[in-house]
Length: 149
Image (cartoon, rainbow, N blue to C red; front, top):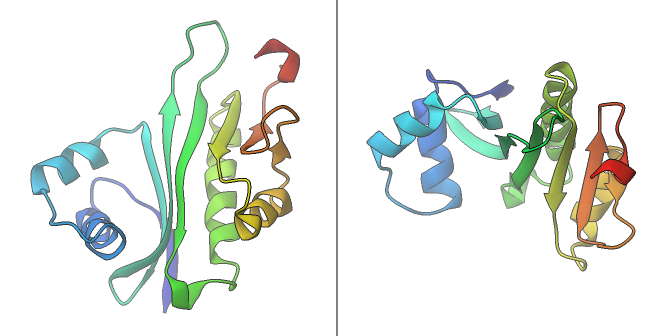
């Protein structure tokens, strides 16, 4: 059975699954604990049989001006056998709902111009493709818009 959830300090096993399954690296427990204890690190994961099969990783970033924080989405990853099942869309929407609930100014991510499946995913989640940089997608949640960034 698949479970979608936001990881927290109690989810060290799930984070370790991401590190070993997606990065193919050994787990550094001290780093894992530190990462999960930082509330600015956001991970939504799809877990099946104690293994993470998909995840969205983001970092909540402070702004230097008076605007609200922003969320940078660094990874949207799905294991090959779980692709095209709507999991990435559900996880990304969970991250977007978090940003809206936290009243963040905006969410953004960077993708490759030729990554058409990813671009279709972001557009299906109402991502705004930046007119000057086709690799950037934005989701605005505060009253300010593009002219103020």
